[in-house]
Image (cartoon, rainbow, N blue to C red; front, side, top):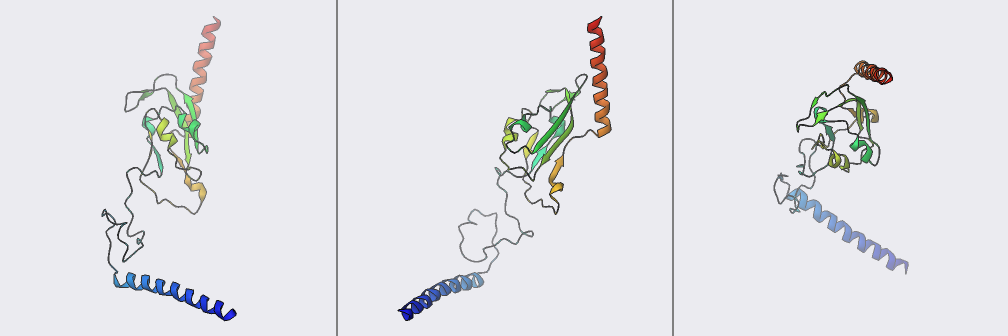
Length: 187
């Protein structure tokens, strides 16, 4: 009984090793450079089976969802992207302007300053919901997929153009305007 089990184990081990050796000899005999941009790349089952990254990179599909990018000049700071984000990786702080401050590329009037617009890509789950709800389409997903950092804190991207001092000046300007409006209402 024990001899049957040992013989069966040797037999199945030999079958597995034979299959492994078949694949190994096929890969070394058929070693060739495969163009990953060809349509039949995934159909070819012989030869080299790995891509030599970073020398060779896989083609990025057009519908791929990777790193987020914000065109802050088109942002109206509506906060919809932060509200729809299921993991709260987008932090936005807006300051109301005293008047119109410009227009986006689609003609929408901007009335808010972005004092803070941070996206924590370490939390992001790449769902794309933020890109769908953006009325000015200023937040998009790029084809960049190979950003890596030693420190997770470096994965927070800041897109706001206002410095802390400029933000305080804008807040003070808004407070003065509100005080002036209150004074006019009392009179």
